[in-house]
Structure formats: C-alpha cells, structure tokens
Image (cartoon, rainbow, N blue to C red; front, side, top):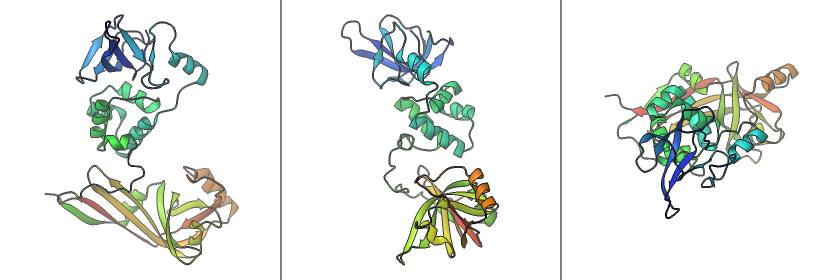
Length: 302
C-alpha cells in the first residue's frame, strides 16, 4: 500500500463491504508512501497515527476520479500517470488558496499554523490536484479570511457585494500614495469610454503599471480603443466579501496609443499577463493619471 498527501484512507466493513470510516491522509512517515499515516478522520476531525489493516484501501484522489478506489495490491494509477505525464498541475481549489494566501502576504507556514494543518499538506494542496474534506476547507477559509464557497469557486456568476453591510462601517478617503500602492503592478481594472455608437461604456481590461502610467493591450477597433485621444476614467477595486469591506481607486487622465517600437517592445516584455479575452490585441494604450483618488470602507475604530 502506497499513498500521497491528500489521498483518502477508507476502512471498510468486512461483512457488508460498506465504507465504515474514512479520513484524509495529512502526514507521511516514509518517503515511498508506505504506512503508517497521519489521518484526519471525516467523522470526528481528529488526527491519529494509523497502521492500515487488510480492511483498508486508498482513494488516490489527485489523479483518479473522486470516489474511485484502487486496490492495495499492484501499482497505483497515480504512480503510473506521474511517470508518463510528469508533475500534475495544481487544482482549482489549490490555486484559489495560493492566491488568497499571497493576497494577505501570508507564508505557507503561517497559513498552515492558522489552519492547524501541516505545511507539507498545504504545499501539496497548492501544487497538486486534490479534494480536501469540508472540515479542511472550513479551516483554510477561516485562516485566510474568506469562505468555503469562495475557495470552491462558487458565486462566480454573481456580482460581488451580496453580503450584509458591517454594523459600524466607515468610509474614508485614500491619499494618492496609497492609491498608487493599491494599483500595484498589474491586475484587472475598468476603463470608462464613449463607445463608437456615442454611448458611454465601462469595460474590464488587464492592465500593468509602468513608469506611473496605466497601460493595457487591446485591438484597434475594440471598445477600449475608444479611450485613445480622450480623457478617461480608470477604476480598480477589491472587496472582502467575508468582512463586508473593501476599497476602490479612480484614476482620471489622458489616454494615448503607444507608437514607438522600442516602447511597445518594452511593454510587451514587461507585461505580467496576456489579455484574458484572448485574440489579437497588440495595440498598447497608456493612461497618464492627472487625478488619483480612492475610498476605503472599514469598521469604525473604537
């Protein structure tokens, strides 16, 4: 029997073949994945050291379909797939956990301590596909100041801000320096323009900040391209759904197309991401903020 961190250990009844108990393997004592294991049981959330008997088998969740049991005898499909396809990519939950952790400037060790789990298991979860238990997700969500639904990707088709307002909110202005810090180096923001049909439009774009200018890529005949040659408003924000607080930054200034080949090449080389919308979007637009303002919602300090 061999296992990986995050696999599920199932103890079955020898009489009924029904699953009697299951738990998540959160600790290995041998590099080759052989027993014993540290197991967090799903029914009690307790962690115990387990030496599996003949009534135990492993669910290899990182490669197989969840709920598919593999026999203790013979090579596990996870091992054969790893050999043929290389290191697996992280799962959706792992990517969301890593993003939330970095957003809050938390190390893996500190996050694991807050969630009462081993740093090795958190590393596994962020770097390999896994299917953590509900109890594990609850602890991670609490450690990261978010929700289980958010870590699972729920609510992606709903607008943000559906939660209740905090009991004593305070709306305060943000100074220009803090606004520049919040703009950071790149992200997704919204640019407000007059579209080709004469109507106002607000569209999201992937942006970078280079030499104090907000720059984004678009196509010449697209709606964001209507910004060129006009004064536009550019907005970026972040909301903490769990705490009902957040901030927004508004930059207002002239937008111009970047034409010098050296500047275009430099922007392309320094870009953090390509436009999420895909397609040919090679025209760079630069917004030089003339006015930079922001607001933040926080609880009133008592």
